[in-house]
Length: 161
Image 1 (cartoon, rainbow, N blue to C red):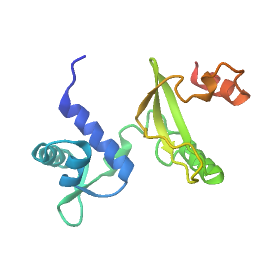
Image 2 (image 1 turned 60 degrees about the vertical axis):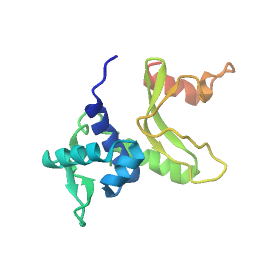
Image 3 (image 1 turned 90 degrees about the vertical axis):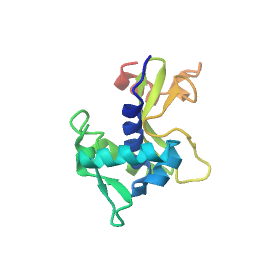
């Protein structure tokens, strides 16, 4: 399938800011995402001109504006930052210390919508992040041949699978 590299890069930049949740320099973003620094500089400048990024206090770093937060908030208000589902996931993660994952089916894969990382050392660690994809059945306790738990049945029912 043909891709539009600049469109992919814009979304990867937004996902990068979602992960780090702080200002970042052109050099840092280029290095982390594996982009040429000159292309990254132009991309970030264009996003700032459109009102999606603002300059940091040092004028050499960037940070998303509230316009970015508003982009998809209407699609799933409960999942949006500050939405009740993300709050519940955060509370559950704090209470249990375990990794909490909200995922949705995507063809033959599962896409992570939001991940609350574990806070204990003996917990599931995932290299994937929000927006990442894994093959269905891989690491999914509900896909094992043994009888799935009531929680798995409820999760399948809620997701329509």
